[in-house]
Length: 206
Ligand SMILES: [Zn+2]
Image 1 (cartoon, rainbow, N blue to C red):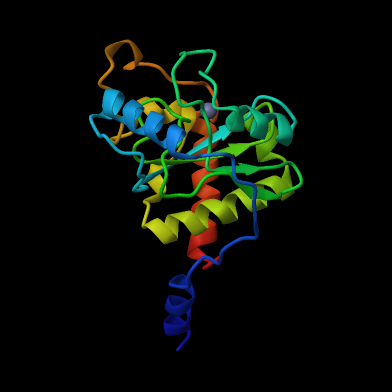
Image 2 (image 1 turned 90 degrees about the vertical axis):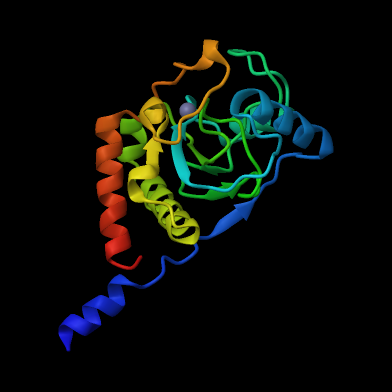
């Protein structure tokens, strides 16, 4: 009786957290730029995303609006100088508010080597530790990741930090100078912690 009940609970679906729509402009020009980028870097002439991976990031500052403005601007990124501009599908703010910027069936440029397959989640903050100790932000982040994991049947091992991008089995980069490019946000040890919390949440039936 109790075992059956436990099984039922463990199969419960993670509920959709409250998400505030805050779309960035993503019209035909940006879509065409994304498709050209995907062709050059992945050999896929499409802007359509079929998510298999979630990549966690932090913005590097404490302002939601500056992150949103950067992603909305669609100017060549200062580091690599390509179009479309960088973006992320979601931003989790310090107060735990979740904003959605881009639909999950459209590619965003947030992680070299994985944009063809990955949803990007940004966290307003300047370090893994800062986000990890922010209870409101972490609660929302985990709820969002859990919901996406179930919705797209993503394996928890494929919820990764940006710094783990090169070791993802999905990593693909046809443009050789970028083949080893990654960033330092969300280090492996911090993502071990994050995935552990996510596993607990999903096991509990969120
Ligand atoms: Zn990042």
